[in-house]
Image (tube, rainbow, N blue to C red):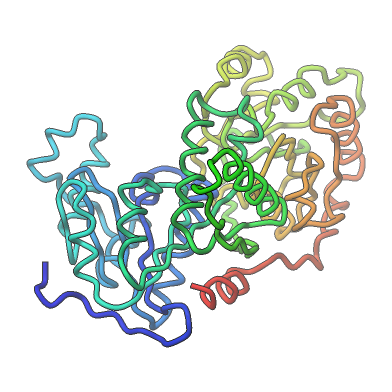
Length: 427
């Protein structure tokens, strides 16, 4: 640890322009298909590296904490994107059996790349290496522990900013893993106690966050209540995906109407409704049978649907699972699709409908406030529980054909530049 510390500049009467971005989530997801939250953290990493202000990356690793300087963050990004291979695991990693082989390499490289590193829960010692004011940014719903937030809040000149993507575990616990409600409650309580600013991705998310924080405050004795952090809305940008027709799945049926569902196969995403539509398709319908392409990995609490997908006679004929496809393949599929189907039962944002609209692909979506905020009247909105209306909408799209696409040519979604123009002025 440098004796003189890493000196950060300060700006009077303004939020400090020096930022420490938590990269714990991205580190834990290395080598896996990026989720929506992963992509947000990645966008923040790229945005900070593209700017001239000082930036650092904090990661909770198996041995403790590491702080990456700009060069370390750039090297981490190159490894995450696959431009540089991860190095060999350090000897000590053999004692961390809970980590898979790739994670052992990730943690080893982070330790090597660190400008400052500390063992165990000695985060205050690491923070002492930073002199001057800074903003701690956590946008990944990860590492929001008391062991991380309390030392941050205790360090003079530090501001804590957290992005909350949704409150689904509290509003729809039936779609979440066991223990998710208690875990999310704890995270929200810690954010309320320590953060100065909360970034929300939609009006819906902000409304939900404010409501739940107020309820948590009400549960406390009056003297223990706090002033909740300011909650702002900064809509997420979406990167234009470059399609590569040479990367299409080889088993994709040709000359048949294609419909896509993009996202992890979990109960909330409601793939079961789509399988119901396809399994009950009327064989007497005129024209070729539609193809359902499910682009997403299998998630959790969905064993009944997994069994149906494994056993349906439609598998490999009318229904296809394509997990872990690269973005260029998904973009190519969207370019051929009659529509993106998005029957999700709850969302804080929802990237797939926005990506489809950007590519000119029609969107058929459950009627969700978060989708309406971004796409307005562009999609066809349906009840996410009404199989018959979804079957009717699919048939209508087949009748219109691919010539019916392109209605979104004038659609201009929020951009990352717009997002960061809001966020970085306040952090």
